[in-house]
Length: 360
Image (cartoon, rainbow, N blue to C red; front, side, top):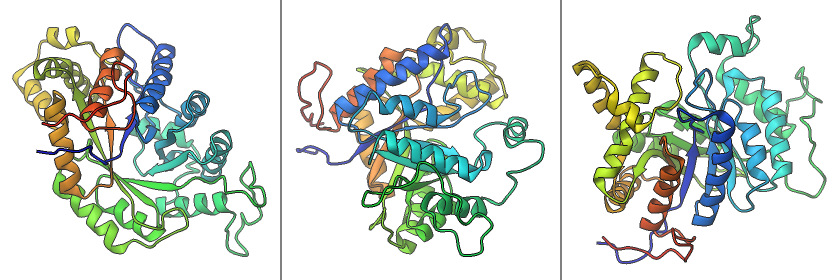
């Protein structure tokens, strides 16, 4: 029994789903609306994830989405969750996110991942036939930081190359704080050495033990930096919240079908609940869907609240980042609002009145 407001910061990870029967322009307009709602509700960050060759998701270039978000929000921290660095030239990433920082000073995060965010063929197409970006991740990361900060060692072939826009004397740097994405121990160790933030993808690797171990490793080896005087760990979780457990379970049907299609390499829009119910699942497919749903926190506000607080306590997270994939945009917005209200964020509730904490 908790009797006071939770101080646990909550943030949003948006994959920009494209529902069947809709299109990418509508999905992007919905992302602008959801970000404004998240800001109103008291969420801390709004990150956009990079995915390619997926008709169900529209955020192939997070920086473009974030540029639009910077113009319709004023408080939210905006970031990539993340940039899949092997797909990009480090200088291009440094310039894109310095430019975003100029659009939204002091509000930009740069999350970096090693995965391609797509299938192997598409990754090869992104990186070019010449294999220009086949460098090890560690070398790419070092180049990105050097381009971002202007700190190439003397004699380096890129020394003197300035990532634009350049910093202005006497003002904070435009290069944003770095976060390393992780679903294993590698990202935790790298983030600790760099003095970066750590974002563990529990929605990808649902093992609470792995998340807790990664965060312990990160904290034990953490080296303070200008951007992060202290270690800071986010855990990302997949959540579907509705007024009743029955409705939440029903809404989750479409997510199960999407996971099934992704596992088969199918490229299709995000399915509706009706499509999911009409799909003729084989027993093997039913088992696959059931397994995929184990990664998602599904329930009414009291159930979701209890599971999220337990996740934060068990992993040692400083902050939780929630990703909610639903076919109905209104149901998705409502899910975030219900969670905000259940965990006592200091924003406005569904009625437009200040949020009040609900004990359970």
